[in-house]
Image (cartoon, rainbow, N blue to C red; front, side, top):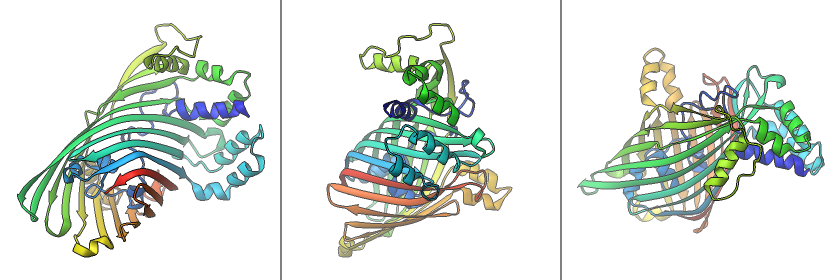
Length: 420
């Protein structure tokens, strides 16, 4: 059992994703730079460019820092499980309960999950950890994320693969407000820079994973035979809000500027482990590293920039605001591509439209709902002053067209701190 758990740990922490094994020409999601999953945002259909606060503002719209609202996450921990309904229907939970500790449990779980995977890309599980602070127009955050993806050429078990990915980021943002006409017209300006580090490796099929677990020294086998790609970028987001009477706000964000990743392709993951260990002042754990000219090669990849628009409405209800606080968010994402596609197909606009609503009750309970690319979402939040709990259930589209490959997801977040 220790051997199988070690392999799962390695796959989650070191494994990654590439549509082309061994050559790593691009990322698993080449159109998107790193962003954490937010239980609040997902419950609101992924919308929130004009309404996001706290750690979410650092990623959704740095101009929102101009409100000077205080937040502190020490830490914020999220777990997202994809295909939860299929997992229950496939009997995966019962497999864990009935065979916990069995040497065959992991293999059985892998085979059962393979029955869920469909053609194209997909997700299994994502964990997010964040430490962040916002206040006085300044924001600082540290994020770490692990993802386990799936990919299949035709949806058959023989072509199903698992891919894992690691992202780490340090984000700094600043925003300020220009009051032109008090309580009538003001403008928020903001920008954030994010040092992002990404690591991912080849696709891992069920047979390869099981053979790896059955090896006498699975850790050494993994480090010697599994290549990995890793690198960094410093994407920049720039945002602006126009604040109008009765809580109306119109927002615009240019994101992923300067998102050029400088990457290195390691022929063996052990080379990458040695480099990481040496970076923190430790000796490398892999003693059989290759030394040839092709052991480490370089390449680069640029994530295209995007222009997003947002509309928000958070009315000030005066004294009633302590008991009832509604908000509404409408977003149009990647508007350049949206208008290009919409010129030929008016239905394409739905691919870029997101909407969400939130209702705060007695400053303690949050009820949320949303609409994202034709799919609905629901969520709830509980604010216990220094402890905040959020949960959301929603659908994402992983196919080229709406309805091709919807996947349901459940996100649960626990936050120690304050978000006001």
